Image 1 (cartoon, one colour):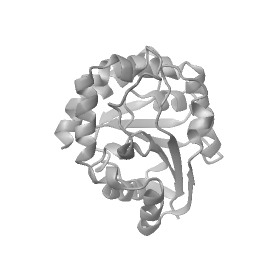
Image 2 (cartoon, rainbow, N blue to C red):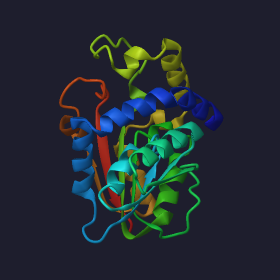
Image 3 (cartoon, one colour):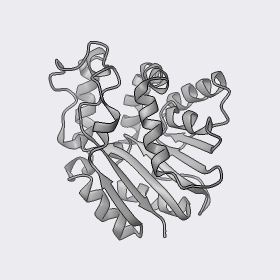
Image 4 (cartoon, rainbow, N blue to C red):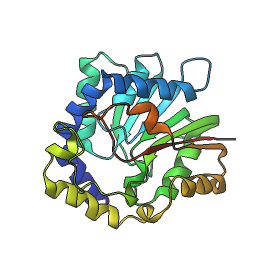
Length: 239
Protein backbone atom coordinates (compact mmCIF):
# COMPACT_ATOMS: atom_id res chain seq x y z
CA UNK A 1 0.00 0.00 0.00
CA UNK A 2 2.80 2.43 0.84
CA UNK A 3 4.43 1.78 -2.52
CA UNK A 4 1.12 2.54 -4.21
CA UNK A 5 0.78 5.78 -2.23
CA UNK A 6 4.33 6.83 -3.10
CA UNK A 7 3.72 6.10 -6.79
CA UNK A 8 0.60 8.27 -6.74
CA UNK A 9 2.34 11.25 -5.14
CA UNK A 10 5.43 10.84 -7.29
CA UNK A 11 3.27 11.36 -10.37
CA UNK A 12 1.84 14.53 -8.83
CA UNK A 13 5.07 15.88 -7.32
CA UNK A 14 6.13 18.33 -10.04
CA UNK A 15 2.79 20.11 -10.41
CA UNK A 16 2.32 19.88 -6.64
CA UNK A 17 5.65 21.63 -6.08
CA UNK A 18 4.75 24.50 -8.40
CA UNK A 19 1.38 24.89 -6.67
CA UNK A 20 2.86 24.98 -3.18
CA UNK A 21 5.54 27.50 -4.18
CA UNK A 22 2.82 29.82 -5.42
CA UNK A 23 0.77 29.19 -2.29
CA UNK A 24 3.73 30.02 -0.07
CA UNK A 25 3.83 33.55 -1.46
CA UNK A 26 0.05 34.06 -1.57
CA UNK A 27 -2.51 35.43 0.88
CA UNK A 28 -3.48 31.83 1.62
CA UNK A 29 0.12 31.02 2.51
CA UNK A 30 0.22 34.00 4.86
CA UNK A 31 -3.02 32.83 6.48
CA UNK A 32 -1.45 29.40 7.06
CA UNK A 33 1.63 30.97 8.63
CA UNK A 34 -0.48 33.11 10.95
CA UNK A 35 -2.49 30.03 11.93
CA UNK A 36 0.63 28.05 12.82
CA UNK A 37 2.24 30.91 14.74
CA UNK A 38 -0.87 31.19 16.94
CA UNK A 39 -0.19 27.71 18.29
CA UNK A 40 3.59 27.70 18.61
CA UNK A 41 5.15 27.72 22.09
CA UNK A 42 6.65 31.04 23.11
CA UNK A 43 10.36 31.53 23.66
CA UNK A 44 13.56 30.75 21.83
CA UNK A 45 13.72 29.45 18.24
CA UNK A 46 12.08 26.04 18.13
CA UNK A 47 13.09 22.68 16.75
CA UNK A 48 10.23 21.78 14.42
CA UNK A 49 9.50 18.62 12.43
CA UNK A 50 7.30 19.03 9.36
CA UNK A 51 5.94 15.51 8.73
CA UNK A 52 4.73 14.69 5.24
CA UNK A 53 6.26 18.01 4.21
CA UNK A 54 5.67 17.51 0.50
CA UNK A 55 7.74 20.14 -1.28
CA UNK A 56 8.43 21.97 1.97
CA UNK A 57 6.07 24.95 2.12
CA UNK A 58 5.65 25.00 5.92
CA UNK A 59 9.32 24.14 6.49
CA UNK A 60 10.51 27.03 4.34
CA UNK A 61 8.16 29.54 5.92
CA UNK A 62 9.03 28.57 9.50
CA UNK A 63 12.78 28.40 8.90
CA UNK A 64 12.59 31.95 7.52
CA UNK A 65 11.38 32.99 11.00
CA UNK A 66 14.55 31.58 12.57
CA UNK A 67 13.32 28.16 13.69
CA UNK A 68 15.35 25.00 13.13
CA UNK A 69 13.12 23.02 10.79
CA UNK A 70 13.37 19.49 9.42
CA UNK A 71 10.96 18.22 6.77
CA UNK A 72 10.36 14.56 6.01
CA UNK A 73 8.32 12.86 3.31
CA UNK A 74 8.08 9.30 2.02
CA UNK A 75 8.06 10.43 -1.61
CA UNK A 76 11.61 11.03 -2.82
CA UNK A 77 10.54 13.36 -5.62
CA UNK A 78 8.81 15.62 -3.10
CA UNK A 79 12.02 15.85 -1.09
CA UNK A 80 14.06 16.64 -4.21
CA UNK A 81 11.69 19.51 -5.05
CA UNK A 82 11.84 20.72 -1.42
CA UNK A 83 15.64 20.81 -1.50
CA UNK A 84 15.58 22.74 -4.77
CA UNK A 85 13.25 25.33 -3.26
CA UNK A 86 15.36 25.54 -0.10
CA UNK A 87 18.42 26.29 -2.21
CA UNK A 88 16.50 28.83 -4.27
CA UNK A 89 15.24 30.60 -1.14
CA UNK A 90 18.55 30.30 0.78
CA UNK A 91 16.68 28.41 3.48
CA UNK A 92 18.26 26.55 6.40
CA UNK A 93 15.47 23.95 6.38
CA UNK A 94 16.68 20.36 5.92
CA UNK A 95 14.75 17.65 4.10
CA UNK A 96 14.93 13.86 4.31
CA UNK A 97 13.10 10.98 2.69
CA UNK A 98 11.57 9.20 5.68
CA UNK A 99 8.45 7.29 6.74
CA UNK A 100 6.05 9.35 8.86
CA UNK A 101 5.06 6.18 10.72
CA UNK A 102 8.70 5.36 11.56
CA UNK A 103 10.61 8.64 11.94
CA UNK A 104 14.31 7.98 12.51
CA UNK A 105 14.92 10.46 15.32
CA UNK A 106 15.87 10.01 18.99
CA UNK A 107 13.32 10.40 21.77
CA UNK A 108 12.56 13.96 22.93
CA UNK A 109 14.00 15.70 19.85
CA UNK A 110 11.42 18.29 18.74
CA UNK A 111 9.49 21.14 20.34
CA UNK A 112 6.82 20.93 17.64
CA UNK A 113 5.62 18.25 15.24
CA UNK A 114 3.30 19.60 12.58
CA UNK A 115 1.66 18.09 9.55
CA UNK A 116 -0.88 19.05 6.90
CA UNK A 117 -3.01 16.70 4.81
CA UNK A 118 -1.04 13.63 5.84
CA UNK A 119 -2.86 11.46 8.38
CA UNK A 120 -5.68 10.67 5.93
CA UNK A 121 -3.06 8.93 3.72
CA UNK A 122 -1.48 6.72 6.40
CA UNK A 123 -2.12 2.98 6.67
CA UNK A 124 -1.20 3.01 10.40
CA UNK A 125 -2.28 6.32 11.92
CA UNK A 126 -2.05 4.98 15.48
CA UNK A 127 1.61 4.13 14.99
CA UNK A 128 2.34 7.56 13.56
CA UNK A 129 0.73 9.37 16.49
CA UNK A 130 2.64 7.18 18.95
CA UNK A 131 5.95 7.85 17.21
CA UNK A 132 5.34 11.58 17.10
CA UNK A 133 4.69 11.53 20.86
CA UNK A 134 7.99 9.70 21.35
CA UNK A 135 10.09 12.26 19.45
CA UNK A 136 8.41 15.31 21.01
CA UNK A 137 10.14 16.93 23.95
CA UNK A 138 8.36 17.29 27.29
CA UNK A 139 5.57 19.87 26.82
CA UNK A 140 6.07 19.63 23.05
CA UNK A 141 3.16 20.41 20.73
CA UNK A 142 1.54 18.39 17.94
CA UNK A 143 -0.31 20.36 15.25
CA UNK A 144 -2.23 18.26 12.77
CA UNK A 145 -4.10 20.04 9.97
CA UNK A 146 -6.23 17.55 8.05
CA UNK A 147 -9.73 16.81 6.78
CA UNK A 148 -12.21 13.95 6.82
CA UNK A 149 -11.36 13.07 3.23
CA UNK A 150 -12.57 9.50 3.69
CA UNK A 151 -16.14 10.77 3.69
CA UNK A 152 -15.69 12.99 0.66
CA UNK A 153 -14.83 12.22 -2.96
CA UNK A 154 -12.09 13.93 -4.93
CA UNK A 155 -13.40 12.47 -8.20
CA UNK A 156 -16.81 14.14 -7.83
CA UNK A 157 -18.01 16.90 -10.11
CA UNK A 158 -15.55 19.80 -9.73
CA UNK A 159 -17.61 22.32 -11.62
CA UNK A 160 -17.70 24.72 -8.65
CA UNK A 161 -13.90 24.95 -8.58
CA UNK A 162 -11.89 27.53 -10.56
CA UNK A 163 -10.37 26.33 -13.87
CA UNK A 164 -6.81 26.47 -12.47
CA UNK A 165 -7.62 24.26 -9.45
CA UNK A 166 -5.62 21.01 -9.21
CA UNK A 167 -8.74 18.87 -9.29
CA UNK A 168 -9.66 20.47 -12.61
CA UNK A 169 -6.22 20.07 -14.17
CA UNK A 170 -5.05 16.56 -13.25
CA UNK A 171 -6.24 13.48 -15.11
CA UNK A 172 -9.46 11.87 -13.94
CA UNK A 173 -7.59 8.56 -13.67
CA UNK A 174 -5.41 10.11 -10.95
CA UNK A 175 -8.45 11.22 -8.99
CA UNK A 176 -9.94 7.76 -9.33
CA UNK A 177 -6.68 6.21 -8.08
CA UNK A 178 -6.85 8.50 -5.05
CA UNK A 179 -10.34 7.20 -4.31
CA UNK A 180 -9.24 3.59 -4.73
CA UNK A 181 -6.40 4.12 -2.25
CA UNK A 182 -8.69 5.82 0.27
CA UNK A 183 -11.12 2.91 0.24
CA UNK A 184 -8.34 0.59 1.42
CA UNK A 185 -7.28 2.76 4.36
CA UNK A 186 -8.99 2.18 7.71
CA UNK A 187 -8.73 5.87 8.62
CA UNK A 188 -11.23 6.59 5.84
CA UNK A 189 -13.89 4.80 7.90
CA UNK A 190 -13.38 6.95 11.01
CA UNK A 191 -15.36 10.01 12.05
CA UNK A 192 -12.73 12.68 12.29
CA UNK A 193 -11.45 14.58 14.21
CA UNK A 194 -13.36 13.00 17.13
CA UNK A 195 -11.69 9.64 16.45
CA UNK A 196 -8.23 11.25 16.44
CA UNK A 197 -8.85 13.07 19.72
CA UNK A 198 -9.89 9.86 21.47
CA UNK A 199 -6.86 8.05 20.06
CA UNK A 200 -4.45 10.79 21.15
CA UNK A 201 -5.88 10.76 24.66
CA UNK A 202 -5.37 6.99 24.89
CA UNK A 203 -1.76 7.33 23.73
CA UNK A 204 -0.96 9.81 26.48
CA UNK A 205 -1.30 13.22 24.86
CA UNK A 206 -2.87 15.97 26.97
CA UNK A 207 -4.56 19.35 26.39
CA UNK A 208 -6.19 18.04 23.21
CA UNK A 209 -8.13 20.63 21.22
CA UNK A 210 -10.02 20.11 17.97
CA UNK A 211 -11.08 23.00 15.76
CA UNK A 212 -13.37 22.43 12.79
CA UNK A 213 -13.52 26.10 11.79
CA UNK A 214 -10.04 26.09 10.23
CA UNK A 215 -11.17 26.39 6.61
CA UNK A 216 -13.13 29.58 7.32
CA UNK A 217 -9.87 31.27 8.35
CA UNK A 218 -7.67 29.88 5.57
CA UNK A 219 -9.79 29.58 2.43
CA UNK A 220 -11.46 32.94 2.06
CA UNK A 221 -11.77 32.71 -1.71
CA UNK A 222 -12.19 29.91 -4.23
CA UNK A 223 -8.85 30.14 -6.01
CA UNK A 224 -6.32 27.50 -7.05
CA UNK A 225 -5.40 26.86 -3.39
CA UNK A 226 -8.98 26.33 -2.22
CA UNK A 227 -9.80 23.06 -0.48
CA UNK A 228 -13.45 22.08 -0.96
CA UNK A 229 -13.32 19.58 1.93
CA UNK A 230 -13.60 21.33 5.33
CA UNK A 231 -10.32 21.09 7.21
CA UNK A 232 -9.80 20.72 10.95
CA UNK A 233 -6.99 21.34 13.41
CA UNK A 234 -5.94 18.99 16.18
CA UNK A 235 -3.60 20.46 18.78
CA UNK A 236 -2.18 18.22 21.50
CA UNK A 237 0.61 18.32 24.05
CA UNK A 238 3.16 15.85 25.37
CA UNK A 239 2.94 15.89 29.20
